[in-house]
Structures are given as structure tokens and as C-alpha cells.
Length: 91
Image 1 (cartoon, helix red, strand yellow):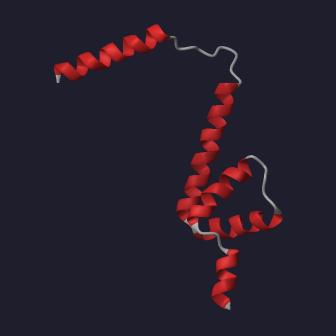
Image 2 (tube, rainbow, N blue to C red; image 1 turned 60 degrees about the vertical axis):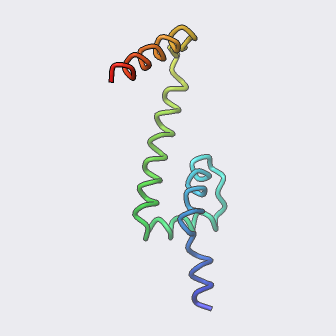
Image 3 (tube, rainbow, N blue to C red; image 1 turned 120 degrees about the horizontal axis):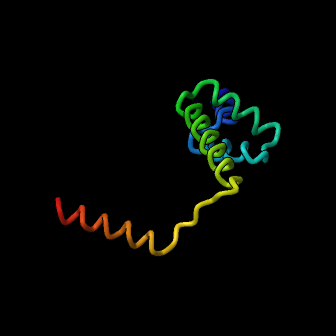
């Protein structure tokens, strides 16, 4: 019985990553928030994942909202491919 209660309260790491992403989009119920908080209190890896995920979201949102977004055209892509091919041949 105690094992079932612990399993219900604590999310496994595989589900925690999904719940962390849902949290950042604001889609968590009260129970999910509680379970996430309990899991993060004991799992340093998921806490690290949460920090990294929040950092990536922050960077992406910052770059999306920039006015001067550089567009990479086909010529730039082909030029980069050529440089990569030459470096591969030279090694």
C-alpha cells in the first residue's frame, strides 16, 4: 500500500521531463504541480533538466522576438557545405 502511494506521488523521471515542458507552457493541474514539486525536491537530474529547459525557452523566445532576424539563403548553405567538404578532403 505504501509503495502504491509513493509511486502515485512521485513521478518517474521519464514522465517528469514531459511535465516540466507542460509547466513552461502553463498546462499543469494542481496535482501535476504537486507531483512535479515532490519529484524535483529529490531528483537533481530533473532539476538540472528544468533549469536547462527554462534557459533554452528564454533564449528561443528572445531570438523569436528580435526584429532583425537573419535569413539564411540557399547560397549560404551551399557555401558552408563546400567549406565542410574541403576540410574533410584535407584531413
